[in-house]
Amino acid sequence: MEIKIISRPLLNGHGETLVLGHYEGEAISGELARVNRPLNGQINEVLVSKEFSGKFLETLLLRTTRKNMPRILLLGLGKKGEITQDKIRQAAGKAATTIREAGQSTLAIALSQKQNGISIANFTQAIVEGIILSLYQFDLYKTDCPKPKKEITGITLVMTKASDKPQVARGALLGERIAEAANYARTLCNLPGDVVTPSRLEQEAKSLAESSDLVTVKVLERADVVALGMGAFAGVARGTHEPPKFIILEYKGAPGKPIALVGKSVTFDTGGISLKPADNMEQMKYDMSGGAAVLGAMRVAAQMKWPVHIVGILPATDNMPGGRAIHPGDIVKTLSGKTVEVINTDAEGRLCLADAITYSLRYKPRAIIDLATLTGACVVALGAHAMALYGNDYKLTTAIQKAADDACERVWPMPLWDDYYNQIKSDVADLKNTGGRPGGSITAALFLKQFAGDVPWVHLDIAGVAWNGDKPRPYTPKGSTGAGVRLLIQYLMTQAAQ
Ligand code: BES
Ligand code: MN
Ligand code: ZN
Image (cartoon, rainbow, N blue to C red):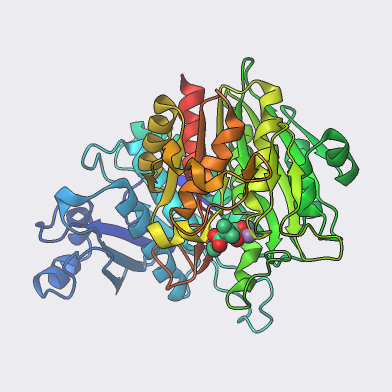
């Protein structure tokens, strides 16, 4: 995407479609008033006639007589007092897709001054993020797409005040990188399971390491994880011919203890011997959404060269019912030494994560954050609009909550009381890998907690939010959503600033 930042008069474009936001029920003012006069009252007319009222996400495309700015898109921002950064993201996205549908390839957008206390940098970031996230399409396998494809290739940000340039440039760059990282994660999750294999994730990690001097990568093979004693992760990988990869990425933008990011990276989850039903099983290609989020977030930290130390861990494997697959009743020995009775081979995520969390302790992390499409129970509890948040440390969970609010990726706190522990006690081993139906997301989290020890740890169950199986939402198309990327980046950015 080509992003230009200019401060010349609004109608002096290069043929772009100019987007002008308008609040519902407000009198014509600001940018609108400024273009209304040279357009001989055209804007006022549609407001008076109520052809356009400014309702949230309402759009009206106008044709002007100006050669350098032949089209104007009026964009409804809703009630003035109710504007938020996320609504700006949604509205900018709506404008971009509307303009693409109209067959145009560039757009200009007027940046007004501060909105409801939102800084000009954050305002610009939200606009750019919203546009790039909304334009995402996964059409790699569509051979019947119209050619040439309708594509938006340029955004012009028109400032009211030239002195805003540094903040606008900063917001635009960050917004672009964040949205591109989220789209990158989306593609990894949308690609079929036979394409995004553990080896493909290894390649992705390696190309990230190649792009930055501060990033290194280490990959453990099947024999390595067995030799190290990661019996839980190796146990899951037993059922597949696809070589598992235990991927460790390190970004050293600062000295000191790292933040460990652990992402569930099951590249396809059939359930194993406890085979899943056929309905919706094709979606289980997104069972590596946690790992994709870690890759996306680390990529931005490295691009921005933030002074922060991060270790990213992706225990990548398929979960398949092969001839050597673990059976229900098998007992695995985890890297921590704890033994786990495998009741259900479909509860494979916690087995992989147990060893990954234990492995992360080698880096003496100051915090561990794991993201996982861990349980169907989480989908039942919270649906598609919030991740379940668990943690053992008030300060860390609060920081994650704050990052989630700021990035508008919702999390909701869940209990982690020891009262649930009885459900995951085994008669024959230390733990069992399922806790029954009641509180299924909670018992999964409580299982993971056993491996974090005293280290501040947060677990995000992203099973419900990582996939949009419903209608497209503003800036969230069908399929993978890129969940967790914006949240993690927001958290890393604030950590880097401290
Ligand atoms: N990957 C699934 C969880 C999942 C389900 C993610 C639906 C997204 C949508 C996980 O590995 C799983 O199968 N969990 C089981 C655990 C159960 C056997 C204790 C589940 O939730 O059914
Ligand atoms: Mn499973
Ligand atoms: Zn799974």
